[in-house]
Length: 397
Image 1 (tube, one colour):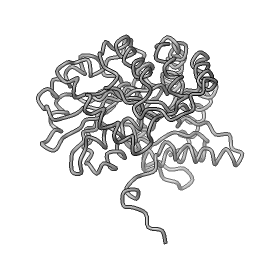
Image 2 (tube, one colour):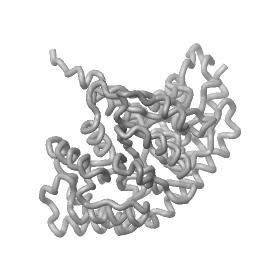
Image 3 (cartoon, rainbow, N blue to C red):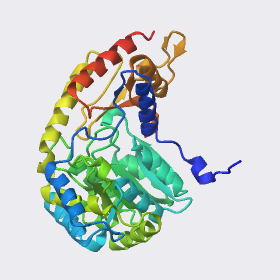
């Protein structure tokens, strides 16, 4: 019998990937499944970025890359951070990784020790929880509900901090809620961190360019804490480049050096072709996918309007990303053909089996009253999905 490590046994399967797997299995059986569980744009990478990748192949960029990324890509990232965010970084403060997820994992593994506490506002992206587990640290969840647009307050943050707190990790725009922290809200959180100089802030900004309220704000803008912020971003969401697997961090040079050291023992440098394409993406700027942003806005407004006719669901107006985090708790305790709905997980399985709609239960993100609904698909499918959802929920008694 093969004995697996305690480390891997402690980890949970990604619920988002699990729902995608079950959706595929039903599709293979011939069912018409509408998948609303996937967190990726349904658009193609812009042509100029694809051309940069093709040129890189022809130019024989087929050798190992520097662990922290090509120098000219790191320079381009510094340029982007200055142009779009007003942030000054040097190339030795940038580490390019195989996706933003690796950047986050690098940071947590380099900064958290067993027994340390990591504050995680909930709802949170599913992998934060498991990455903290891998570091053998303890996640401390600070819950924010729909009434506050799923955003925590400075008082909540202050109350969660102990002498064991070493890290704080959050996303804005947020996966799974689409919530966006304003500059004033970030400033208020920064003022709390000013009083606790040992805490490092990991700011996941991968949805930066999918923002419906104007200019993106980063917590790294506050000079008093900038040196303690690990800014994580990438090209997957804003440039429709999920499969290219290219993310990066901008951080204190000491933190960047440590992450470079770790990455050198795990994966080494990111894909050479993806890096050359990413240089073009950095120079293109957010305007390259402005049409994608407007389409997401239209879809958000469409689904919000459609859900008004679905009884027993509650949602807010998300300001970014491409998700709705829908409270479905009014349906708990109901049954259909002897099957009782006790949680959002039960409801997701019911909707998958009876309506062939794939959503992700909120338990994956720290709130089992809700389900995550991704509107990164066509308007026709969104209309059909909400109609199926309405019909299936009406059968619950």
